[in-house]
Image (cartoon, rainbow, N blue to C red; front, side):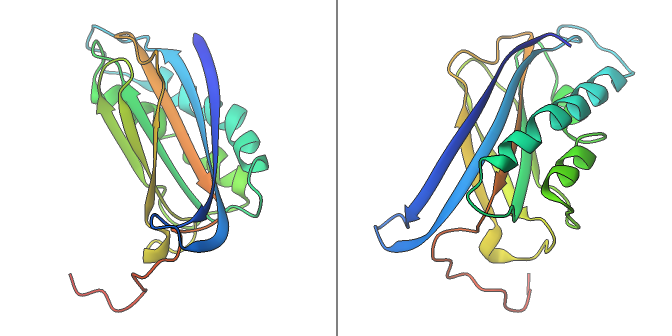
Length: 181
């Protein structure tokens, strides 16, 4: 794996979007910019990307969790694939082997880890969807953390992202009522 750089973004939310005070919520994104070994060509076997995702999860997720003010409650993952790559390359990094190290770092996690992948150019943003680690239908924990890396992804790179939070949305008003849709 050729790793160009890693980044951590930590934000602490203390009010909702109109300034109403809330209990502080910490959200942390762990990001790695890696060279895509399959950029510009079709490859059937993507196991190398599976392994890269698992390794990055082991290397970065515990550090992200340690940056939270309280115990982790929500998580998510995403990837931005540079223009010479394919969406499947991002999916290969965040699906088969990433869940295990993410769950290990947060001490469990029964729910699926929300995810997002797209192909885009340098400076593109991505919304990392986050959801409750144990309760997939906890509406107050449906959220996103939007990130970007100013100089990535280059055409032959992948921006690999994981997010973890210690709370849901500030002052949530969408409850956990009956699901009707």
